[in-house]
Image 1 (cartoon, protein in one colour):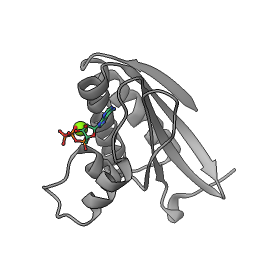
Image 2 (cartoon, helix red, strand yellow):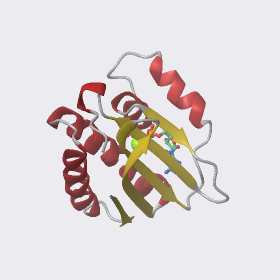
Image 3 (tube, helix red, strand yellow):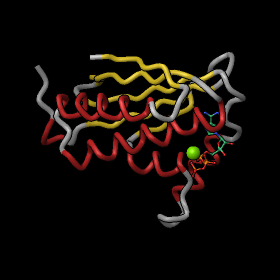
Image 4 (cartoon, helix red, strand yellow):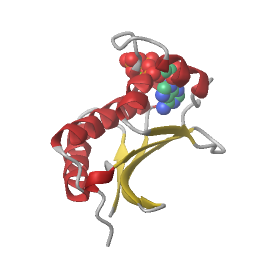
Length: 137
Ligand SMILES: Nc1ncnc2c1ncn2[C@@H]1O[C@H](COP(=O)(O)OP(=O)(O)OP(=O)(O)O)[C@@H](O)[C@H]1O
Ligand SMILES: [Mg+2]
């Protein structure tokens, strides 16, 4: 299960959100986690539009080391995110409410990483199903 969406205009986020919600539901995420995933997509998409103009979002089901989850990969050809690790880890020490978009995504998802690319930005956010919901074929 893998879908890629172009991203340039804010109104496109509505469609990406509903597709992502459906994929998350199919993978087995409950409504609360679906909301967390969809909220993360909004933040990452808004960053592309606000800080880089345009990009793509790929949403896919992942299975690693016996775990099942969902991964959001956001790419753009903008200026890149300076001090990504520092920004995200700073958020871990702050109280909720003071957090910026990326720091919020870091709380909502299980993993948030910046993948090195030649030009622009590639950010990956992953959420795993809770062990009780993991049913692997
Ligand atoms: N896709 C991107 N391309 C380039 N720079 C980015 C991108 N995403 C984020 N940034 C940089 O990282 C900073 C932090 O992003 P973050 O989403 O955490 O906060 P914000 O977008 O400034 O504010 P908000 O809390 O409204 O999201 C931004 O101010 C911007 O400088
Ligand atoms: Mg932001």
